[in-house]
Length: 417
Image (spheres, rainbow, N blue to C red):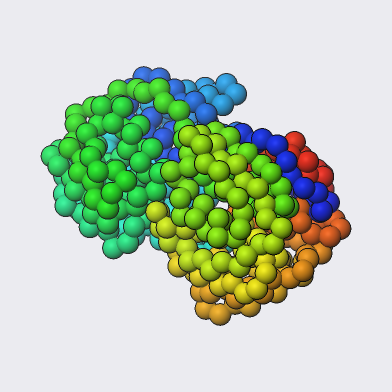
């Protein structure tokens, strides 16, 4: 198990290239199960979660080949309808195989995902939607068992927007008989990327990115060659780092249209933000202005940027309030930030942050993926040395983050423990 050691007080400057989005790559790779033949995916990030999904797909009978940031998958060998606990427990996104398995093999037995540090993420909406498509669902000894001789289109209204729920139902509905209408769906760019991939495989999906989409079922899909969209959360993390350190950083290979709510708030902090077609330059201000933030599903401010933005507010001038409306336990990084001198008070789903003149380096413990990134950001601006432990969380969603920060001028290194 490694730790990340950061020496604070160094201004970041230069260019950084953003990796492909983990949360787009995972469902896109799973979609390869819906077709016989080799699908090819470019710009796939080199992450622990990607390795986990590849192992799961191989276990289900798919052939998988990898070369650098390209992954090739042949779903023609799909034969095993069971995703075991040992594979699913490593990553909640493994539940995404449920829809494709029912659609192609007419049955699925998938382990229920385990707990999550940032809060409950139940899959009841996935199951309810599959039932409306005609699947019989049972929960038995910690597994979801689903059967359907033939899925049939239905009009489904989700109780709340859910990204993985929307993706699971999309992948089931593309091979269902007739027309499916999904309402109150997630609108995230990663959902749109999956819809685009499925359409290129021969599916008929209209309305992705809106609150409702229409899916006309087809008899079969064919392989695809497609590139993974940029990771908007990684991009935002480096932009916050630039603002924190009074830096001057150009984030290359990103998609500004995917980040408008975040960029709006970043500009309010007095950071200078310059957008181009596939890059964003951020120049940090001398004095960071306090800004209130409320997390919301896309196109609102992303919950995955809440912890990073909180670090920025911890050294801002004045008071700010961050309200978390997506996950009920996503302030667990606050205790570690307090150890570094942050003045943060929690009341319900809101955090009141009083900007401090400086943060102090300290040994801290990462609790989840985005908390890990926030602690590294705090270390970049803290006085002294910060040691971030349990960084295996970080390796699930950030590709070589310490190397990218070091190339911008940070004094940062990974140390085996």
